[in-house]
Length: 589
Image (cartoon, rainbow, N blue to C red; front, side, top):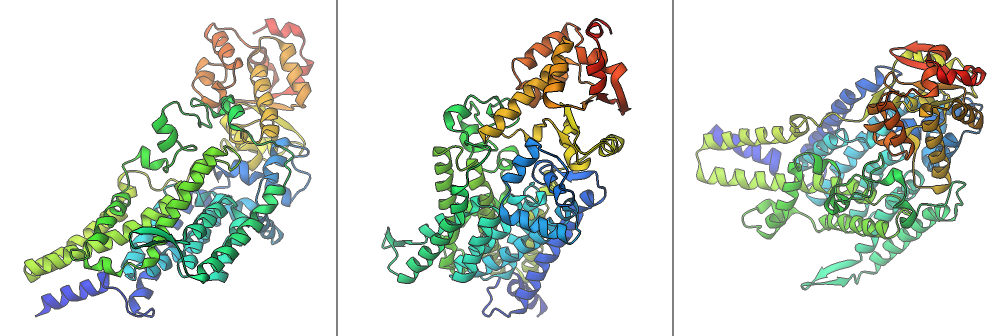
């Protein structure tokens, strides 16, 4: 009778645990996982590879300075460039520098780097699931879920230091769960070179692995090898963190909680929103200060999360969920990851901002945990459902149940598409192209002042310095931020002051060569509706009041005469023309 045979084969292929590592199902599901990751990645990378003017949002602060690898005379004595170069991790810089030595442009490398990072992450994800729960289809589901997650957020796609967190943390979890000391140490060393914050999570996991649940209570491990593993691992964590602890930054000190609360850039209505007045948002749903990944609050809670919650009762009821018996004791590493992440989240808040942003310690690891635990839970639930159907219904219904399972899997895989969150890797397009061509043809030492969003793109595309930009106005090192904040105030003054002497003073103070103006720059909405410009008080409020009254600023009056380029309504103003203007220009329109 073919029906029972087909149903049995279906159950064996999709849901049965493996008994040997060389099972053909492992090979099939592993390569299928990589194929899905490859296809998704190639779809996502079509946009950045289509044009040199399409770049990732974070490239505009973390990669642009690498143009110096090919031309050391670029960005001479530029505060912004020197700052971001100084805070880049050594391994990250070394990788890009080695590619530059081979003649590969940093921006080209940045666009293709996410592909190998995604494939490495997915490979370790599959391996980790197999070590915790030896059902190959579960490894595929976790890998597919994670591929979707990676391309629904902007971390790996950025090619910046945090892009390395997922492959390095996933690899560490795989080797730590397998108690492989040397590979675990290699992962720790690489974490220190590429994304040092990850070291705190790995160190926390090593500590928590010394704790056991025995006879209804927590107790310390009695296995000497656990202490050796932990001691060596923590020793390397300490050594990798030591250079950062001893490094004296030229841009310090790091902002402390008292002075951070007074910084306009970190307030709720500003671009780097941190101190949200709503306690729920501050502790649970804020992008920088809160516990959860931001997308879990903005979109429906992912089904993988609900499945993760359902895993607990499944493990308590093995008679109803037989496949749960195959969940290895190694799976406790998922709980240890959550515990270490929450511990670092609390510590980061206590030491704000010396360990940078609290959310960085939870959002990445939480995504990893719910994808893996959710895939395991989903596989256990499918098995229980299939067993129930085959016991109580006809042979045809067994096959129908199999078809229903496939449909269910398809819906889960299509979830990001259904809610409109895929693909969202945060690429931006610099335009108009003629604007960037113009600046790239100017001398290398020019300085451009602008309040425009396109000002963020000039260093990356035109390889020329800007005095300020919203993407680079980081408030975490006070020695840097105080200078940026002063510049921000002065540029606002130059744009909206009615006194020509103010504009000339700013030009002369910073050696500004050009102003870049948006078409709507002299409207109240341009200042009042933008969180970055609006935070520059009292200049923003004063500018809005004057603009609402119809009062023209000195720069606005000079715009027709001093414009050297106009494209798509954007204007480039020559500062030499401003300096040569007389005070009589202030009364002319």
